[in-house]
Length: 312
Length: 312
Image (cartoon, rainbow over all chains, first blue to last red; front, side):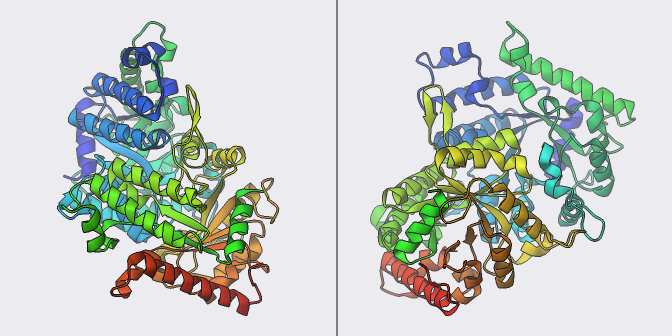
């Protein structure tokens, strides 16, 4: 059973192909919540990191029995310096302790020896004189494929040794994603299609019980037709689908990313869950987040049902 | 005067277009050095981070009057967890205090709002309730262009506001860099040429006194002809050139990356400086590093002179 099998199993148990994005920043926290834990307000990166972590704990508690996974976007933690990285790790460890599958959204990339350090940090272990030690508690990390296979291999090796996985960027959800990704090569393929073919190839030999390899793909939900075409093109590649909610995509836009069994994709929502309380006056933020996650599950499941792709 | 002007000025003052890569890891440290600062050995990430930082301090002291800049590769610090990030920041702050220009080699990339967090973290400041605060002390960061302009703009905005800069990956130095980067588009350009054209365009409006914009390019020295061609193609783009030394490129391979005034490029060496002591029995590591840096300066300067590109 590889990590994508585990992910599929948990999605199936909860009938929910959602990953909650913890792109938490202090601007997203209700004032009263901050006051309760920091009566003198946020006066340092350490304070910010602690407030963010406490917020994440409440969200994980509210979501862990209905949402199979969290995706923690490291940029929001790095901007609070090393203190932020403490909150990043504590958040991942807490989500894991609550049975959630944990994705570190780090989009790391480098040449071989350096990529191996990143792989150790996020999906492996760091060699130390006294043995190996985990730096960060992720099950899966995101990576950027621009450097080609020798920037990828250290990750797949770490995944094989540690039962972990990666999602490589294929087609991103942002407005300018086509600027390079949609350019057409001489052989008629776009860059993202060329990357898709490589990702499918790189995953060979790591396929699990459900047929998916440990190298998944990031496929933006904001480009529905491309999602459907990539699903056919990459039959052994699990998709992480960003762009739902605040970025505009709906359940219908996304259904094409799933396979015929309602498997093969997980949909991320960050701000729409994190900041759900802003649209629900008087409702506690964790209750609002849970309600939004339930609404999203309903939206995704009914869209999949309409397409005859009910989650098994 | 933009950051590339400052970099060019310091290169000119020291007649040395070298950046020392502090890709420091505990495996690179002489046993005696570790024993002196940690008599009980390295027993935690905190110990590792402290040993790495102390090593970096000695290197910076040995190099700061002959080498204009350091490049700190964050992967080597992330693998020691949050403790590593403390050493990362302390290393950059120390190098800055010694007058060196500091590059954070982070290759960050994401969509707009998230890219802005990375930009704040490395080449800008993080908004806090009490004002803005710097997370990390870099003057320049490396970035990955795969997501197109809306992943780049937050960086250029932070650079404009903070007098900082970035180097975007164009052509990397690793063996498989061609797997995607050398694929040819319908219009005859390779991916790296298409990226090169965008980088040159993105930098417009930020050009300094020496003609270079605040968006530089990473151009691997291991592909000399491509370096020469890119120099002509990107007349307003400063190059960060990896691949010298341990990766195999020599001064002659690199000279094509410089402009007619011996400006426009800085060459990175990491392991060849960091681990110079391993080839010099009985010589202290900082002396060996300084000797290697002087040898490299001589190699680069004589290669530039041969090509009629002496540093002004």
